[in-house]
Length: 440
Image (tube, rainbow, N blue to C red; front, top):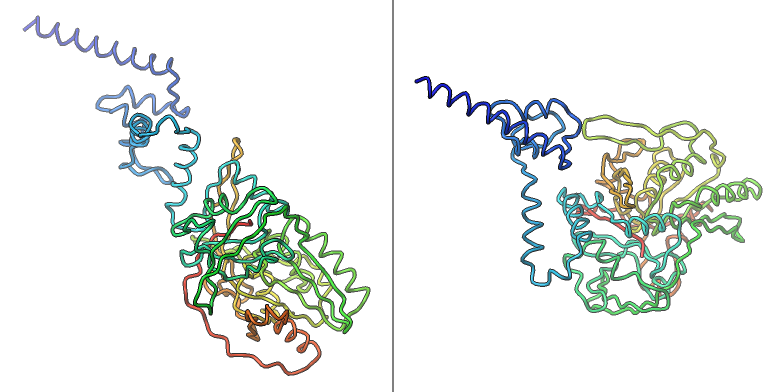
């Protein structure tokens, strides 16, 4: 009996020593437990499975933490299985595997606007906002699960080759786009200037597909173009809400005040959007101190963005031109001017991209965009769900395009002159308009 007692004591001492040695070995090997002393204490406690504690498998669930059935060891098991058994494992790139895993993590959310961007894609995204890159000069997106031309940029290779907003891209250099991601499409379409890319497209109203060969070029986009027409109507065309937009638009406003035109046409057709702050600045040239747009979060919070108090163009008759390629910031501006009766909207129903993303940048140059809210017009309309329905629905057909006619612009001029314009009855498009976009 005494020997059993001594034996038990010896075993307990041995277990205590082993636990102490295990802790020191783990510490010396660089096991870092996020600086939380309570975790170390739990590791030494009775009936605690230390591996589970490290992986978050057995710990008590707290708000904002991972649920108990997540074992991150599985990630490394899959990683090791790939590296050990993949047939061409000498071709594996661990950084590509790592970034691919992060892309998969983010894409599993199912929101086309929430995306992970590796350093290369993140750099291209910043170049897009600066208005300089090499490619074909078109905004592309995934709409109804099909790669779609959202907006060919003015005077760029894509437009010159004949691409139009709404064209469905079925193949890139004869490679099918079925199931393609935006990142993959970007990689296939972009390339050095003076090289060719062939897009196979399907256009609404046409039975046959067509192949369009586009010679890539260096895309340097001035986001604002202006013209004082002979009929004393001032035309402002904004192609993107980029880094140079506020400065160029401010110059246009000064010219309008100086020339005192009969009216202003703000052309936002095929404008895929850009900076929220820029959209608010432009809207503020008509809206003095009211709400321009609101952000509605999942918890019910609403954040209102107010105009900047200038309203230098208030009182000038204004028309906003939009179409299926008008998205994001374009819809904020057109929706605000429409709600406050500061501008009549003419054209086609807009794209319907009205969600708010935050951009998180990381030390390696990668970044992630995460959808955090939805945009509402001043009257509470959801841009993401509805888009902006024009006051006068006017189409621009392929025949018009080929003949260099612009019935939408003609209707805007007619309205400013007080003439009657004919229009079709707007019909609400209830199809899925989920999309994510990128410049090419």
